[in-house]
Image 1: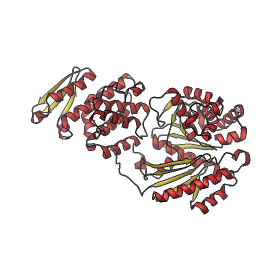
Image 2 (image 1 turned 30 degrees about the vertical axis):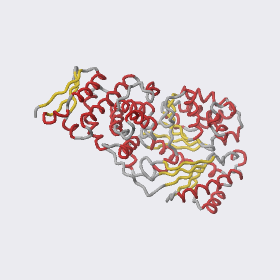
Image 3 (image 1 turned 135 degrees about the vertical axis):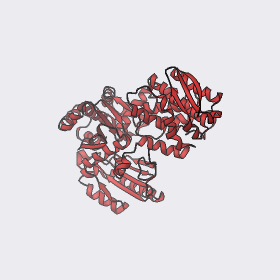
Image 4 (image 1 turned 180 degrees about the vertical axis):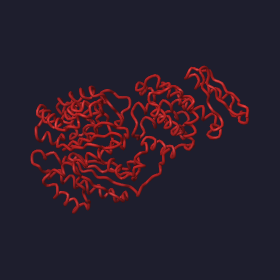
Length: 500
C-alpha cells in the first residue's frame, strides 16, 4: 500500500529568516515525512521597526548575522550537504534588505532567496497540505511582519495573497490601539474577494504566534492531549478566547512564564488578527498545523506520486519496519479482521485507514517490559510525531492498542483521553484491539494461521473457522480470546473445525 523507502541525498537544512525569528531546521532528507534532526531559533525581531522606519534595525541584523554564523558552523559539523536559506517579509520589504542579503553572503557564505509574498503563501499552503492532505479552507501563515493566505482544497493551492499585517508591523503603525487595528484588518480582509467563498470551511493556523495562542488555550482547558498539530476548535470557542486575549496587557497573559518576552509581546495583536480573520471567513473551525513554509519547501521537491502518500500511514509503516517483529503481516491482519466490521460507518474509508494503522503498530511495544507494553504502545499512538491525524483519531488508535496488549480500558495511561471519543467509537476500537490480541495468540506470529483461518460473524455468534489440518492451533486458550472479542460485540463465541 505504501512505499516507505527513504529518498535522500543526506541531511537537508532550511534556514528561515522571518520578521520575528530566524530558524534552522535540519531534516533527514527529502521524503514524504522527513525526520527533524535539529531545530533551533532566535527571536531577532528584524521587522520590529519596519512600520516606523521602513528598515531593519542594526541590533536585530547583528543578532541575525551572529546566529547565521552559528548555524553555518553547526551544519558543517553535522555534515549537512544542502542548506537552503530563505527570507520573507522583513527582508523583502525593508529598504536595507538588499544590502543585508549581500552582507549575509559576504560574511556567512549563504545565498539568501528572498521569497515574494504570494510564493510564500503558496509554500505555506503546500506545507499545510503536506501535513493534512484533506485540508479544505484557508491556510493562514502569520509572521511578525505579514500574513500569507492561501485557499486550499482537493490537495492543491489556489488563490493566494500576502498582506503586510503581522503583529510587529501593526504595533509599529498603530501602537496598542485595538480599534484602529481592527478597523484596518476589516478593511484589508473585505478587499479580498475570494475569502467570502470560503465561508463554512476551516482556517488552518500556521506561525509561532498563533500556535502559542492555541497552546495557551489548551493549557487553560487542561486538554488531555497537549499536541498542537491536528488540534481544532470551533470558531465560537477560539474567537471568544482571542477576544479575551486581545484585550489583555502583555503582563497579564496567562502562563506567561512559558513564553519568552518577545513572544508575549505579539500575542494580543496576533489574537486580534485571528479573531478578525475567523469572522471574515465565517470559518467552521480553526485547525492548528505544525507544518508551514519549511515543510512546503520540502513538499514542493517531491514528485506527484510521493505527494499522494498518506503521511500518517507512511510514518506508521516506517515505525513498524523499525520496531515490529511482523511488520509484513499488517495487510493479512487487516483482511483477517474485516468480517467483524459489518456495521455501516459514516466514513468507512477513514475507519479502514485507522484500522490499517493499528495493524501496522500492533507489535510496536514487544521490546518493552511485559508489565508496561500496553503503556508503551499507547504512548506511541498518542504522543508519536505524526501528522495527518486528529486528536480523536490518536485516541482511537490508542484504545485499540491498549486492548491488544490486554490492559483495562480505565488504565491511567489511557483514561484521560477517553472523553475525546464517543462510546461507540471506544467499543469499535476495543473490538479491533481484541481481534489483534486473538490473532497474535492464534498465530504466534506465523502468518499461515491467519491465512487458513477466518472469522465469521452472525446475528448470534462470532465463530473462528479453522481447517481440520490445522485444528491443533485452536485450543481452549484461543477460545478464551475469541470470547473476549465476542463479549465486546454481544455475541456467543465458538470455534468450528472445517472439513477439507
